Image (cartoon, rainbow, N blue to C red; front, side, top):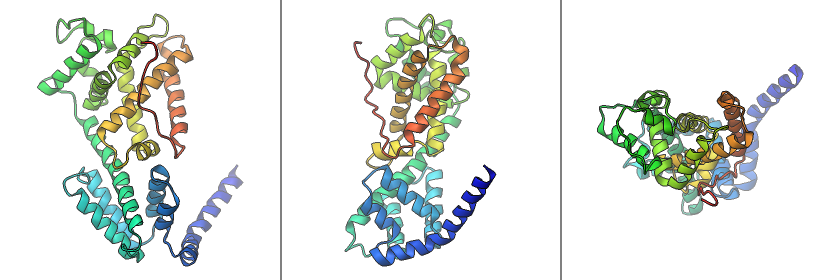
Length: 317
């Protein structure tokens, strides 16, 4: 094993040193730079965007390195997708064209393709920053907007049952741990609430169906707590970049928080089926089954053609 690891490191080192030579030879023979070959040779979506992303990350050209730092700063500050987004992309494309000596009037298709790739790559990075901002925003009972969302969640999931009091044991009926749900949002902040509310509002029939499964006498679980736990999983998949394939394939341009909510709803819907199929002895198996589910999702998303079907439906409702 140690020998194999050593050989792998040696090969990676050799490849790193030889990469400029390979790129030079390919450019001489094809008259196209690496990003052009990717944009012309790969279909729109993850295969193209991830190819461009990896090419830029491995670049040793100062202009490309500086451009990536500039775009990263924009995304991390949540300003890439602001009013100046079009100008930022145009500036970035111009920088690439200039350093790669590409004539836009000849390679107009490349200009369009690379523009979309930049929008997807740094839109995804800004999405990660947006989600982290929501996660860090605590649930505040003094905020009318937060309280309204919480009451709306109850109304959507339990439309025929009135919530008698704001602090009530009734909250346990939809899977909160205690009488006041705000304490359960400490880890995921308002992002956890927004996910649960989106699921209940945009996939109402499915969410109510999943809620009935959570009340199963043998395989039941805490609907809201599991939902917040799945917010953590969804956020992990985005942060790590493992969810890139889905978002690059599902979104023609940049990913949005709404697209993330739909991704979360898919995870919740699929986890519910996964949990029931596992037939756990009790809730103490939650950690193990969640980890198995997470591993399955990571395998699915590792395929660059992955595009999750978020058109959720339950048969025979």
